[in-house]
Length: 248
Image (cartoon, rainbow, N blue to C red; front, side):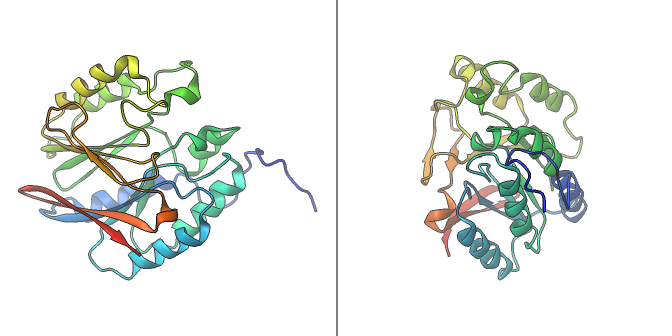
């Protein structure tokens, strides 16, 4: 038997998961007036709890898809990504994953790209365009733009015709030590450039939080880590959105 290095980026099994599941989400919800998604985050090292939240979500019949807010891994090791992927593949509904700061360690970004896809991506459910962003600037030492305004401006320029509203997902929020706070105000201004921004969701802080960070009405919602056995559910309808926290 050959034991590979923990950061060996050889991948067995499913790859490009986000894009595969985005197709399912968009096809299933293209004409939806109301839909509901679960938000989980920071499952690093807590594999039993991750299995339990998958089982809990699978028991429901009202969840259309799941967003994972990042930090699937603790050390960015290849096996960690694959273990988490295999657990999340047990979901009966499609899911997408953001990249967290721990996922950038070692060869983590390379593995994340192979298994899940680009750290910046988007999709549309109903009339809501979801913009999912890599905001882990500290892990990149300013070697590339994080957050990537080129990507954000491209999303603005190519905003889907049938989409009327926007929702933003990220791992770390403005003001966090991971975020490039030199551009916080520009980042927030850019979010408000999108059609009818609903809210922002994020992880990283390992606790529940709901804040009007900039005092401009755009709320930021943080979900706790999975160790706390909590996930969030967002319901989107014509009037706006509602959210709740769920213990399992």
